[in-house]
Length: 330
Image (cartoon, rainbow, N blue to C red; front, top):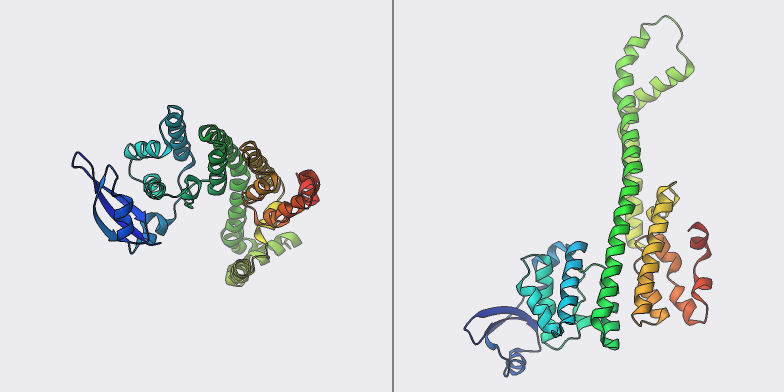
């Protein structure tokens, strides 16, 4: 269906603008014929898919989305219908990615789309989990309770990510600083002192001469070192892009001492919390497992666990279907 930019006028004479998808102008006018807001003008949104949000594809911040859900839960508990609650939040939101996305969601819901289907924007954090939570809330009729569970989940995941970044920041900075210092010594410091060493009449130690030779070679042939490494990196990246089954860099991340362990444990924590909220919301275990596996950001782990749902559907327990390689490392 094409999208149309519609202008509505309410009983107080105020104009409002919304984007609505429909088969045509005639259907739009028929849809809003008995609405409190009268359809004033309609024009097709030819470049709807090239909006600022889609162009830059910037996601909504976790804290901002957490606050939105808290407002939504409060309004739903007060007995406000979902569509009206969403409209109130939009009216009191500042301009930005969140408001732009919510405007589109609000228009889609008003046009008859289900709530869980309307929240399909890639800018929403943990979009698949959020959609599944909304679907569970729609089926159970207790949407605010499911959203509250999702909010607790989002709070824990945000805290977990902060702790993970905090744990990784020091070793990463230390490693980068160490590499920079070694390169500085080899490419700048040692060549400066090589002429000083040449004035010595005594024979220099083998290790000193080897270090000087290495520094001089790297200074004269730095491109011979950088270009192959850069070419190998670019080649592997292209290979990963063209062949989705090839995973190199995410596998290497897991092999790094200390850092690899943190990445693995962080992925397992997010997977477990995701599975917990989906199952508690009424989503069947196989379907919930498939959604939770999709939260694994490391492609190597994702590749190892991609057949998990199929094994559960075959009758295996989750504990037995889980890849032993991951279990032994976790």
